[in-house]
Amino acid sequence: MGPSTALLFLLMVALAQNKDAQSNAAPKPAAPPELPGVEVAAQFLIPTKFCEYGPRAYIVYFPVEITVTNGRRTPIILARQLTISRLLLGANISEVWAHKYEIGNHTAGLRLLGHGPDFEGYPSSPAFIVLKHNQSYVFTAVQGISVSNDPKNAVLGTVPTGDFEVSLELQTWPYQRDAATLNNQWSHFGDVISGAAFSFPVQIKLPANPVVQKCGLMPPPG
Image (cartoon, rainbow, N blue to C red; front, side, top):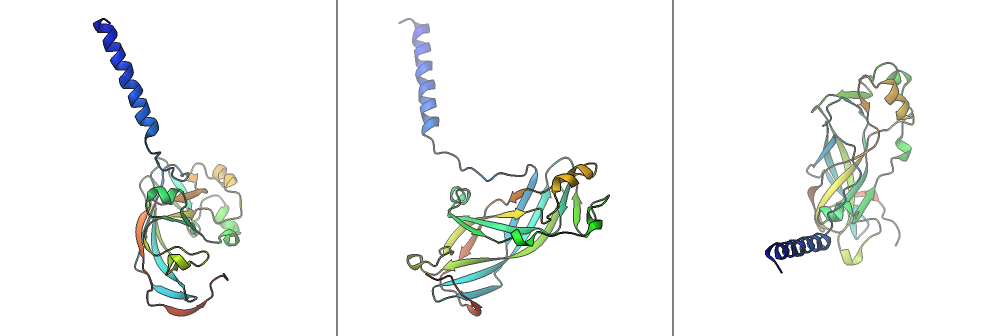
């Protein structure tokens, strides 16, 4: 085997080993579909209340400061009445994106008719905000999380205690009216945002057996 042939053989072996290493590597966690350039950050503040949820569980209520930033070069049109539609929780980011634990909020019934003037020639300020590049809209929502004190004796619809990474899914379009029509109507003001937006995961702690109030909440049977 000549020098050039030996060098070619070694190169082929190295490429094959590199391909095998890539194929055996752990797959990267697949993040939820995103709205390009719409960045959501969520800060979970100190809980305001722990409510008894039967003898084995509780519900903790977090104020969540949510910041929506326009990372696009063009303006975006954002509804002001935004709601949290889901929470995704996990021990790490991979478990979050895999929906290890998922808490859904019933937002279907919250879709608004809206006032006629809100949908006329200009996106009106009471209902909408226009964000230019790098501008943000900040608001606070309250989110309840139902927690089982003992994972071996879990309550339906709860998550266990411990440290979690959590991402929230933001419903950006609260209206029954079709957003596509307004997107055409307001195209010279910016892009109407109507899809789901997910925040990057942040850490929270769910303690075991905190001091709770009797709030009259009844857990599901079973």
